Amino acid sequence: MSKALDTVLDYHQRTKHRFDRYAAGPGGLDWANQPYPFRVFDGCPQVLLPLLGEQSEPAFSDLYVPHNIAPRPLTLPHLATLLELAYGLSAWKQYGDSRWALRCNPSSGNLHPTEAYVVSAGSNALPAGIHHYRSREHLLEQRCAFTTAHDDLGLPPGTLLVGLTSIHWREAWKYGERAYRYCQHDVGHAVAALRYAAASLGWRAQLLEHWADDAISALLGCDRAGDFGDAEPEHPDLLIRIDTGATGADLDPDALLAAARAGQWRGRANRLSGRHGHHWPLIDRVADACRKPCTAALDAPTPVRPAPVASQCNLSAAALIRQRRSAQAFDGSTTMRSRDFFRLLDMTLPRPAVAPWDAIRWTPRTHLLLFVHRVEALPPGLYLLPRSASATNQLKSTMGREFSWQPVNDAPAHLELTRLLSADAREAAQTLSCHQEIAADGAFSLAMLAEYGNALQTSPWRYRHLFWEAGMLGHVLYLEAEAAGLRGTGIGCYFDDGVHDLLALSDRSFQSLYHFTVGGPLTDDRLQTLPPYAHLPKR
Ligand SMILES: Cc1cc2nc3c(=O)[nH]c(=O)nc-3n(C[C@H](O)[C@H](O)[C@H](O)COP(=O)(O)O)c2cc1C
Image 1: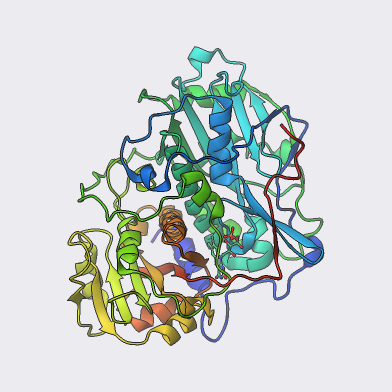
Image 2 (image 1 turned 30 degrees about the horizontal axis):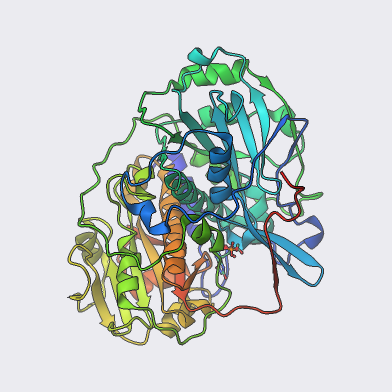
């Protein structure tokens, strides 16, 4: 076993929550040193972005229809829309003297470790260079001005790159060693959030899986130690290519990196916490073991599936994306319509040229174990939705427990939804999700079972991809829950091996990587909701 694989497997085992002890964390919260939620680079030229306002077009359900939305030109307002709908603020919440921002992308503990950058070849929309997005002010800070001629940048016209990085400290401040997992979940949510926002403009978005982390780090300036000083470092996650027009021309990573090296860099990162009471060397070790080298580009074919179950939602994409919230509690009584349930599950399956799954090119490795509580015409119980053709047999051969494996005949035929057993699954769901009532009081909750063993053997860095896929799944569930008139919540706190024991999994070839719940939400009237950008002067 390679040392990197050893480190990753060890990290995963060590950061499991167990019934008799939670993964190592700080114990109490050091409120005086809570990380400031916004990264700022002082001393950069800024580009103020216009705000979107009300938008009735396109409809949310249209985002899933391939080639349905005519590509919008690459202008500053359209780029601003991309960033606002992906990573902009969606509201401020206030309780007493405390006020905190919510964003279009969710985040474990609302700590938002993910930072976003835009790499532009220069156009009317944005000067050529590398720009950091500041969601609080909805502006771009130009970290690097390219000095290389436009034609030598290696970035085709009409193409942008969006880069994501993570500040692990933000999550570690609250969650300790398990925080690295949450940072990866958040990256997955951020990928899907970007893909949906791009789809609303008729733009394509695709993860550039082949790039090495070191190259991403150099391009986005994470390795410029002098610009960070004693500020918390950023770890390179990924690059996403955004094509705004018809061009599919290749980009040239070497030319782009040379341009970044030769460019004029500005700005100094802010420090987020005055003091770091704890250090979590395990996070640095697993991050190091997961460093991705340059690899061949992937191209797994996406199966063509019948058209999805039609959506009943007539909200605009912008309205639905901005209204997404996590439910804090559910009413324990709302029944989900089976049609909405099947639709929501259907949207977790990749289809060619359909958001958000066309952003990644690997075959799905994460499958859904559902705890159905209140879904019309479905007996409560445990259900399984495999997301790839081979998963059912693999799962069957690993599960040591006898199940009935009854196909759900009312579900569309291409959805291989199977009932494992009929039972009141509420107590099990709640217990396994760290005793959180939200897992029992919704219409259903679920655990995401990831193909864990084989995926990692030769490429330990794929550990991160498993979480990214789980985060993307969570994002689809959040938006589809809203589209069904319900609400969802991601659940990062769960007892890993408790889930595996429920199925009597014979080995570690599947691991539960994320939980989620959907239902009729209860609102907390003590909290005030304020508009996202009322604090900005008129633009
Ligand atoms: C990866 C992840 C894990 C989460 N885990 C939990 C959880 O265990 N329990 C919970 O109540 N909320 C959980 N949440 C919801 C977050 O607290 C929520 O996204 C955050 O407070 C921001 O609020 P918003 O989603 O309404 O924008 C999780 C969210 C994410 C993205």
